Image (tube, rainbow, N blue to C red):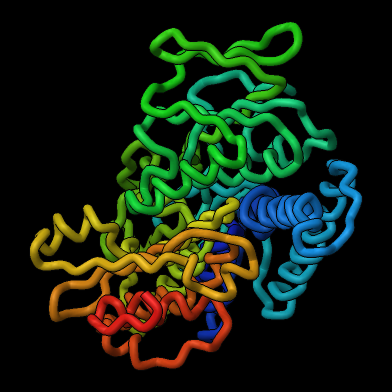
Length: 454
């Protein structure tokens, strides 16, 4: 007879292992099927390794500018092989910890590629497992738009394995992934050009944030071409050539394809069991149920933001749903986002155009607090803003910021929005001095009509 579990999770990334761990806490027997390594994209080829690279980039920038702080440092470039070694060490340590945690919690990890063969059965390399509840969490992979990958045309996965620093690079895509790699490579001394088909870089951000981002990238020497999509990428004798739809061409040593990520759902038997797919994404109701049996879907395969912490939330939500605890839905609009470039971007809630459309242009209030007035930002040598958007006479519905290390302020920002705080609620709270956190308080005071330093 097939081994049976209360909960079987297909995929061991952020969403999958969160669902598994929380299900065990409810006393369920749990199996986790993973074809590669638990931790998924986030741990091995996404969040963790890229942020290790960006930290190395920050150190490189600090070394270059150390003289202005009275610190004498000789900067002799970066050693990509050593940076890769540092990154690999971080990833290995986190992987070991996660593996140990799953074992300690008695989650049965089944290695292999799983396939749904009925509404309550999953087959893994010829062995069938039964489950009262199935959670689909197979994650995403880099889109390539059909471009042939090579040692010169790469995705973020291959970029993280480079052990040398290219002299020049073209980045296809000016969203989060493209901007982060462009930022890191620029800090390493790479001549970077971003190609973005939409009218701006980081197009999902608030217009005020976009304007500062583009201005700062230009100042750093990162060039970009926006508003025209690429037509072709071809290898040359000494690199790559990218041709845009308007005929313009760009050449560099390598090309990073950072045009987004697509769901991993092909060949998993989902449609055969009646699950609805749209462009590969699993369609669910608001409670992440697929409409088939006791099958749920979580994380990157569900349309919306592709973020590890959204995956965590989805996994926990479904485990609580299975347990009958009626958990609260967290809408994508209220999920915190950070782009870890230099400058960093943090955002949650409605952008100004979205708020104007939702609540009416005359029914919202907006304030921008310039970081030039913030002591800690001056010490760090950063510029930027905190932008807050509120409904008139109502709660703050959007908080956005840009500047060095500003991502660290997303914690309070997401509490403000998710707890539906009014400007006066935040304005009366104490914010330690001198910190960048004060900028949130200053913005709230301005929105309340009583600015202190603004």
